[in-house]
Structure formats: C-alpha cells, structure tokens
Length: 261
Image (cartoon, rainbow, N blue to C red; front, side, top):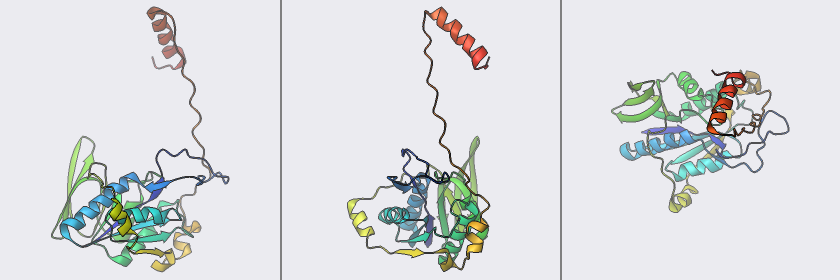
C-alpha cells in the first residue's frame, strides 16, 4: 500500500509573531517552524497504517527553506521518503493554488490513501484537503477520529455536532485527521540519525506539468493585502469597597458600560 501524507510548516504555536516590512507577511527572522499540530495526527496514522498493512509512506510539503527540516522530522517519525515542493512561483497563500499543486504531485505518485490534518494552523482555511480530493476525483472524509482500512475500503468515524458519524468508502480516498485519532510518536535519536539517509526529493510545480498561469499569483483567488496584530487588551479594573459597594458598582458597570443586562 502506498500512503501519502501532506504536512505543512507553521510557526511554533508560542511564537511572538511580528509583521514583516511589506505589511502582508510575517517576519521570519528567529521564527522556529514545526509540523502543523493536526498534521502530526495525519502522519502518525499514515505510519501506523503502514506498520499494520505494509507498504510505504511518502511525506509531501509545499513551502520554502523551512520545509526540509519538518520533512526530516517526518522521516524520523516513520515516513520512508519525502518530497519538498518549492513554493517559488506558487501563490502559496491561496488554498486553490496550493491544492492544485499538491493534487498534481499526488497524481504523480498514485497513492492508495492520502492523509491531511483537518486544517493547518498557519492559515486556518480548512480547504486544501477538500480541493485536493476534488481535483483527484476521490472521496474525502474529514475530522476523522477513528479509521479502519481493509480490502480496498475504509471505515471512518468523524465528529459531528452532538454525535459521531460513520462513513464507509472505497480507496483511493483523502482523510483529514482530527485530534484524538491517535497519540503521535516522537522520534528517538536513532530514528533521527536514520532519517538523514532517507530520500528527500526537491521538486517545483513545473515538474508536475503545471504552469504559472495555473498556480501562480495571476491564478490566485485569495490575496493577502495586509496583516495586523490584534490591538492590545485594555487593563482590567479592580472594584473596591465592601461587598455591597462592589455589587452595586459591578451591576452598574454591566448595565451602563457593558450593557449586558
């Protein structure tokens, strides 16, 4: 079985984000990039499926210089090979252009199943896996919390409001992993050293038969025109006095200032 997993490099979740000089992107100086947290569940499930059914796991990521390190981590966690798709020339902020590029890359390796995290915490668009499934013409199952694969079919449980939905479909298919699907492993030193010897290919969109007109800036439907940090939070106000005074002041504030009562 050939299993593909698409991962994304995102800033570490506790990073203090700064806006770059262009006002449209983040300042990458001193930013540590990690595997997007939901993609960790996707990668772990891909490796577990390989261990149970045999085959190989191929990790793919689109991006710049931050990508090789996270792909090496993916190899250390159990992937057999990796493909770095350069974001040069790709409208990487546009989910449609990213989805087209990944779909073309996946088509070139013909996997039986493709894993994504339910969304990347960098853009939070939650669209790329759906676009890939549409471009490939494959069924997709999202927010998956349990998965069984057997005899060319899969059975997945997915979270819905107020319950669990069970979905069955044939392969190939696209799966978007939710937290709770598994407990991701962390690589040991031996696995990290072995990962350095595993193949990591570098590709561009043109290697998959795509043109700049299809995935470049002119094809983008989403363009970031400005980024702004949230305004600083106002300092809190301490209510003093005896309990009766505090109660009266709080009620007055809720009624006249906040206007919630």
